[in-house]
Length: 306
Image (cartoon, rainbow, N blue to C red; front, top):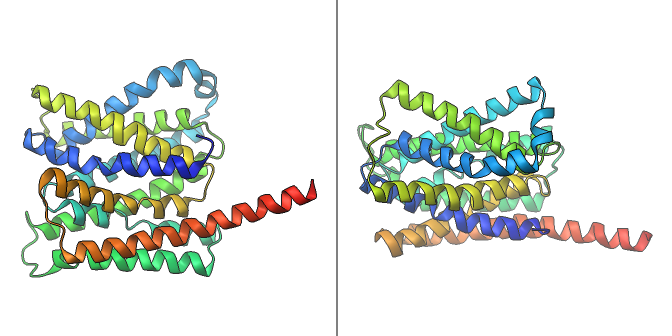
């Protein structure tokens, strides 16, 4: 894991399975908040031994101020999961995962003006191309919108709101990961997220038991694949690349998830999905290739000075 680009590729593949597992969870009569709670609970438990035995010193050294910031990030993450998982109950995988990746607009703008992660014109064009692809991909979902209750339009709105939360989460992680090891950061954020999700389940009366054997297996797999191999690797990469690169790379999830939905769920890939997905892929490449060339250029100068 010395190359952050490799970690991001693995993370994209892992999170692409997330929506598929959630759709299967609905077939097992799982409720949205229950899926979110158990996924984060199991992810936190998987990280617990590593946090205690490998980075126990860092955990003890965290002060109240930083703990408060991590709690806020955990709360935002709980909102993200609650909104996004709920959207998948109402709309298609392609529409949901595309709208939840709206955060490059927020992340790119805030990072450029407030976090010194300067964007070039090439980066801005790449993000614009990716956003244009999202508009094409989700165009059909906004046709003939009537009452919002229980419709695909409501699912789209929930996914859009989840994307805003994802942007805030990425920005917060970019700042905190500069001074915290990935295990310490991820464990505490996931722990706070789990607590907030449990509160949400209790307040809304969400049923947490009994669950079928298949449901328990799905929840554990969600924690292992999208949780550990997906989001945790993203958290690791935030220290080594800009938040905008990570955010735009997340646009690979709609492509992977849409293909998996076609193969495993039988969801149709329309022309809008194929054309929009192509624009999204181009936007990802334009952003990441530009950053990669800049990094190589710096290495060249460093070698010459040696």
